[in-house]
Amino acid sequence: MGRMPGPLDNARNLLPLITRHRDATESQRRVAAPVLDALREARLCRGAVAAEHGGLELGGPELLALYELLAGAEASVSWIVWNNGLPAFFSRFFRPEVRAEIFANPDWLYACSTRPSGRAAIDGDGYRVSGRWSLVSGCELAEWIALRCTIEENGAPRMLQPNVPEVRMVWVRRAEVEILDTWHTGGLRGTGSHDVVVTNRQVPRRHTVSPLDGSTLGGVLGRVPIVCNMSAGYAAQLLGMGEAAVATLTSLTGTKPVVDPGPALGERPAVLAAIAWHRARLAAARKHLHQVVAALWAEAGALAPGASISRKALADVYGAAHVAMAEGRSAVDAAYALAGASSLYTSSPLERAHRDLHAMAAHIIAQPNYLEDSGRVQLGLAPVNPLFLV
Image (cartoon, rainbow, N blue to C red):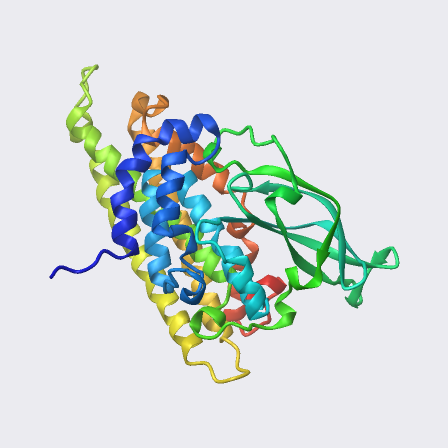
């Protein structure tokens, strides 16, 4: 008997479907319905959800491979799948029975915002929540939306220590939020990253989490650091986009007509060198990223009770992720430039990838402060960004 297809096989089998519906995903500014149905059926948005809750419970390198595969076909699809990972990771801080409630239906998807632009006023055994959050990718598709709020008590932020207010992720159902049609952009159009508004909504405390609550989820998935894994997943998408861009340029060398007296595309030294250069650099960045992520997950699996992941392991992942991000961007930009006028048309994967990667660059996880903190750790210093350790 043959091997049963795994999650990566299922993802690979979906690539033609994703590609066929790229125009619909773009024009509708949300993942096309047939693609969404296929993602649900294959549970690909549940890669970081525990198996006991109907998830795939993939390891770190498997998650990277999943994001990379999907991004090579359509960045908006990989972006939604990757964004579902953060609520999944954060669910470790729920009590087990609440986590089971949150993931009760295998068809449910999730969205979130880490911007602390909401207020959660203490109200009995819960909170009265109001606020507006921007860039909530996949909010129209999600059943649960996790939103970061500052906790207020007696009309003022409750402080954990001087200048450090208490902040919690508040989970609400999609029916409890108003979605504002704000996502009119050049790149990542298919992510539907609209603004959401919550007005004076009562939320029970059990539907809120903070890393300070401590993990209640066993196994590696309940212990592996969150933010650096999201950073690595972001980088994997850029590697997938870079690989696809180089493949498109390579294909063009055999199909693009010669319209001037110069050499054909496949005979130009700059094109030949770029194809070899970027293929090698993408492969090297991918190998290193997978290596340090695998080491991080192995260290998490071997942790003694009460122990923490080493800062060096975190720094290694952040460093590798930022190198991979740079290599992915460089490959897409080079292929876009070298393909000439072919890159101008919306029918070209290079045109879409070029827009998408520049939209992705605005995400907080791609900003240099994480790389800077990695350097601090290498010098034996403490990171400045508190999320570095989460």
